[in-house]
Length: 509
Image (spheres, one colour):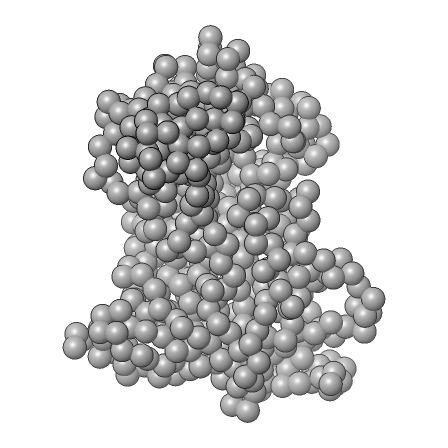
């Protein structure tokens, strides 16, 4: 048995157990160390290394779809191009782990098989299978911090199209891409739209492929130079990186908030600006391409795709790529027949069709022996859940950078843990208040607010929301930046060891 395996087997109990060593888990571990230095903790990670999403995806050109000044942590300056490839993001995360001594706390190759809460001991018990030797191992913890993301890293959303078995070429889902596949000189069909397609198509074109993107409906693209003029100017002035990171991060967030407001107040003007930028980059190809890049919804009603340097438009302008708006009718031996009757010949077909939603990692949870159905719980500000004690789930922002919420939640969870210590409490629950008795209980998010396919397919599996601010994830960084630090941890929705601290009211039966 390796030294690492021996160390793992000796760990039986920690104060806080973090699940997942991706961008959320590593950031949460940093905040826990800094703000709750007396707490013991461990990180359980299913993969053999850190990185989460950035380790799972290996498709051509894989990169961030948010700028790294805001996708990066607030405590670690980013000093490269705003839109970054996965290898640079992994290097950045590795530096955070090394610089802060997080590595010894991470236990790789551990697949959690169940999680049980016992109210008699006020402990979570997690059963896991260790990949290195197949052993079953058990961890206990006072508090569970779920940072494993929200989709299935092992099973993508792969449609079953008619005729796939007849196709003589290569079919692969983007999430299962093999970097050994040769694309130069090949005809490649990318099925899907969104950030993955926006990344894959120009990367394939640069690699010498002739690419066609087949999408069911257009999305909005935002072309921008992959640089930050303010950051570069401050750097030339000799300003330290910590200050540059803080200032640029604040400026980007401020400008993004302004864009969000404009998308609501003057959507037609924003549409016109995005299409004008597209026309400038596409040149003569604009007239043919315009119908395929002009959605029937307002910008940012769904997440838009950033295209650094307008690389997707450049590939189309240069004749290396094209977009077709249609649907697959069936596969043929040499390609795809669309529902409108168009034949698209392809040597390789890449399904950029998204992923499958996986709530809390798909782990079977139970509280005092009763299985937890997350769809029966109500979420508290998208962080905690009714009827599930001592557990927080990191769910980031869909429009803004995910990591902005990792930092905010790090502050909140650490403040909650410290408050519990101050009260001498072993358990925290959130419960609906008397004034919430007649509150409408609704799906996790409104369909007209955010409606990507992966979420709509499985929205019924998600926790529910109320129609009051406390009982929903509002997806608004600027509001939460002000509101979360001001949450009164003794307000009437919080119960510690079954009692509300301020009113000394016992937990409802």
